[in-house]
Amino acid sequence: MDQNKVFTMKLSKIYPLLVQKAERKNRTREEVDEIIFWLTGYDKASLQRQLASEVDYQTFFEQAPSLNPKCKMIKGVVCGVRVEEISDPLMQKIRWLDKLIDELAKGKTIEKILRK
Image (cartoon, rainbow, N blue to C red; front, side, top):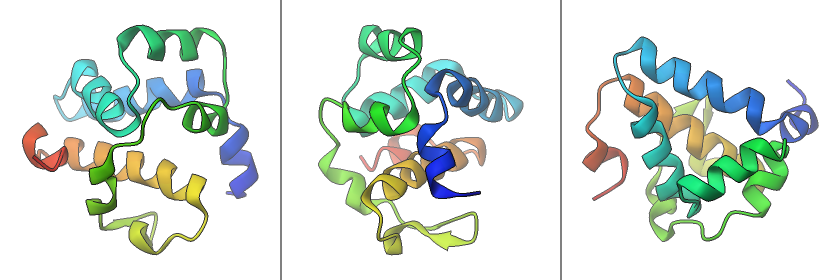
């Protein structure tokens, strides 16, 4: 998929897919939200505002209150690409979130996912 296409996808379309992926593996929407809050600094109210505002993925990450400093600890492969080697900063943030949701779906504990 073209990077620009991913950047312009609506968060309101992507978010349910993230939740669905987790729920298929008996994880919860609350756990997905906790991961998003940890990575981006959003809280429940601000995430809901972003979803209601129909922002695209790029805007969602650009307006993130504070990227977690531990995000540099996120390592691994998503879609055949090592997340720590992605040169585009926005694409790296997107793949970090993908990686964390993958870890959730694979059964990792929240403590490990959030690098506690």
